[in-house]
Structure formats: structure tokens, C-alpha cells
Image (cartoon, rainbow, N blue to C red):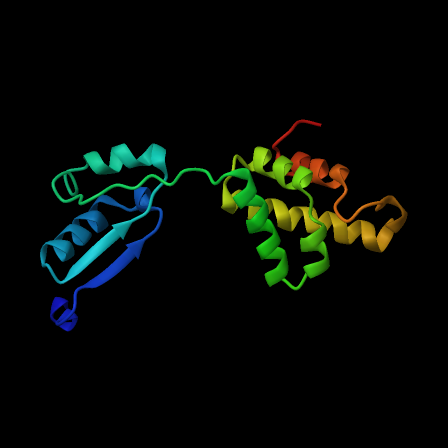
Length: 157
């Protein structure tokens, strides 16, 4: 019931918009045409043109914003902030540029991939801390970064 949205215009954010069915996109169009709701659609760039060309949206797109890859320094800061938020302050301060740059290259600067990479890396670190602590010579050994990349399929063995 569109009547419940009286007053200020509401904004609804839809992620992965390229995956929605045609019928749902038509429903979104009808709601947007009511003037009571506006939609922000998030999608991967390679899907952008296909979705924009759909008849539902060709005359309704206000703007399109392309988000670029972050610079490597920002990526290192992101990793450090994630570690600090997780209570790993010592590791955050010792996490080096070399490791961050390698992760950046493997993940192509993608934060979502970086999160997956970090979870894998810390699983490996935790395993070695418990079973083979003598192999850990530095806070984040480059060998473990490479092991994570192999496990995730970013490099061949």
C-alpha cells in the first residue's frame, strides 16, 4: 500500500540490482512513478549498461556513479581499521605495506574480496600459531599471504 508512505519521500537502496526479475523491476518502476519513493540501485559495472537499457529504467535514471578502485594507501588504512575494529591493535600496527600491496593486487582493490582474503589469512595464521608457532617469524609472514592467495584461487600453486 503506497498510501503508508505519505510525507517525506523515502529512499530504498537495492543491492545487486542486475539479479532482480523483470516483474520485480516493473514493480519498482511503478513505486518510483508514484513519486512517494525513490530507489538507489547498486550493481556491478559490467551489468550496468544492460540494466540501464531495460525499458523500466531508460527514461528514469537520474545519475550513474562509477566507484573506482581505492588507492593502495587507502587499502592499507582499510585493512588496519578492520583489524583495530576486531580488537587486533598490535597486528594492525605491524601490518606492513608489502602485505597490504600484495592483497590489493590479488583482490584487484576490491574491499569485499579483501575481507574474504583477510578471513582466510587469519585462519591460516591461527592454525600456525596453534600447531607450528616456530614458523611465524614476523606478524604477517608473506608466505601466509601467498598461501591465502593460493587457497582462494588468485594464484596457481
